[in-house]
Amino acid sequence: MATCTVTGTILNASEVAYPNAVVRATPEAADVNLAEIGQGGLGYAVAPVEIRTGALGTFSLTLVRGVRYRLEIPAILYDRVVTIPAIATITFDLLTLLPLIEAAVDRADLDTGTVTVTVTVRCEPIRTLIRLWESVVVEVSETGRGGPWVELDEEPLSDERTSYTVIDAVAAAGNFYRARYRVGATDAPPGDPRETESTASSLLLTPSELRELYLFGIDLTDDDGRPYPDRMFQHYIDAAIDWLHDELDIPIVEERITDETQDHYASDYGRWGYFQLQNYPVTEIEQVAFQYPTMTSPVIINDDWIVLSDGGAHGVVQIVPGQGNIADALLIPGALMPLWSGATGRVPSIWHFTYKAGFRAGSLPGNIKDVLGMRASLGILDIAGDLVAGAGLASFSIGVPGANQSIGTTASATNAGYGARVIQYSSRIKETLPILKRFYGKGSRLYIAG
Image (cartoon, rainbow, N blue to C red; front, side):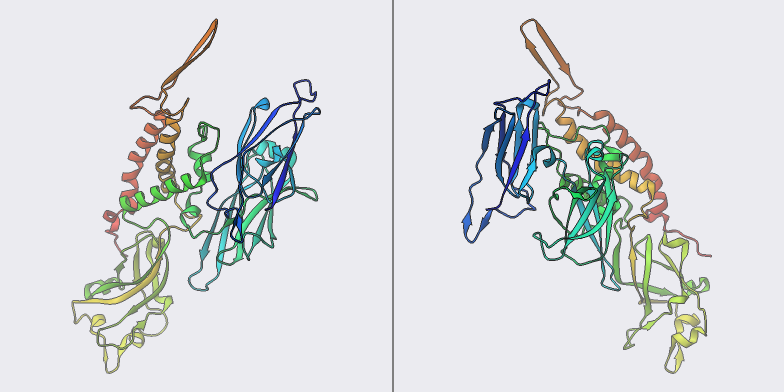
């Protein structure tokens, strides 16, 4: 069983060694991203460890790598939950200064089969970090959590940023990523590895953006000081995206629509083959074709003839012939198709469209992102509000002989601790949603083609 030695020194206010201070490490529930502590049919017991500092205020305790511990040093009010890194020795203060891979989200190109991974690294507390380190380094492993690891990129730390993004343009599905801090030629221990996920929603609104833009100033820790897990933020982001999808009836996260059929109306061809696609905004038209039931194979429309009106915002497609004659493409052996001559008023489901619709990373309109951020925040604010001053407490009192203090909060049986922000966000969502529906909603589909 691999172990890591955690060391440290405790001093008093006069910077004199503080002996006999308690240092306690208690195993916490396993992280779902980490392997179980077992090998070859053997299970290793992970027991609590408690020691005291020596005459010089120093301590050294041996803990199991990969296991999450609650590390307590009451003399200095230190109480954190940490995952023990895969290194031989580390000082206790560096345990909580490891960079966190917040998201490693892949994006497969449906045409080329290549995979691009966007890696988001969270670095906190940034003002402390920049006094110790110069940059954050992201590494990749193509063979699993155990490596070998190859350096992917290095980003300089800035006191204005806690979130850093690195792109792996030649990734493979199932890669693992981790990060470490660096100063000069000295590297810190790496943080926990993270496997890539196919969660495109993370590219539209990341947990870091949710914390920094919509939850700024909110205490995002539980009663024991442990930060809310990333999966909580991602859950509410995904829920907000699903909610807005239902409200607007359009795809929010980009998706591929395969073989959507459209009827032919002869009257539309006075307007250059007007089509209203069922999903929008359209980001890319992959193929347009038509096929009568009696035809053995479809006729593919030249890409140069396909015009995506209004940048795809409303899903309107028109066909404008370019080089050559329209009859060259639409001639069935022996006769020109009657749909183009107008001899037939309506022919059902002979047009076939394959395209992509939704919003790509970096292209999400500001008003939609704002609504998603506020909506996703509501669930987090409800939880945080319940934990103000302790779960379910509206007020509490503390006292010693001769002195008493009472503290009241805005929390109650019917009002959350952050109720004011919940009301503000709910009001802004209510004001903005009709605007989005007018532009993107199905009622906006009465688009006049030129």
